[in-house]
Image (tube, rainbow, N blue to C red; front, side, top):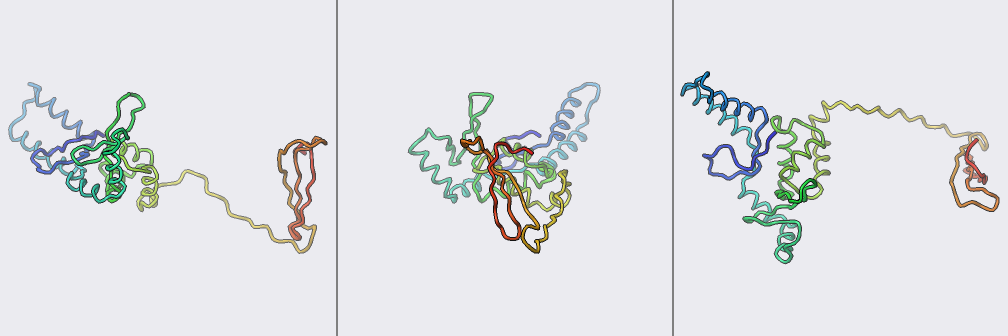
Length: 241
């Protein structure tokens, strides 16, 4: 999946952020360009206009975006973001950047010395972003935490991103209904019936190691009577039978 920073539909008057096109659509577009340039397969004007119309319709549906004006409004209403902007004006060396009224997070790239510029998503827009990148069947696909988080981290940032993704996936009805757990189910509890008198049921366990005593003891064998709760502690040098 390729992430684009510009909208596909250039005729739109709204500037978009985070436009997304699937790999299959990118491949189909590149295949069409190759075939149209080949002299062995000429393309009529009617076929070209029909294909362009199809690509345009699909592109408009595939684009997942935030309107810049809407993003600015939500950032202006976010208290935490406004605190960072005020600190940024006094200390420009912090890991944030303000461009055209939009706050970005500067994140270090592990493989390069440059820093990536990520859009700071206000708390009021996190849910809609998670729905797009997880629930949407075209770009989300109900993937697990790691793949969903990796897609979002390519362009966006907010505090505690991983926990937000985990909580959203746990609350996803589709994932809970159809995802099959591959972990072994926990067994049933088997409570121990209480004894009727003392010395009928005794629990024992080792504690330690502790600092060695002059008698070379560093473990304690604890015996507990389940009825009287009486404890007997026996010092031992080893904890084996």
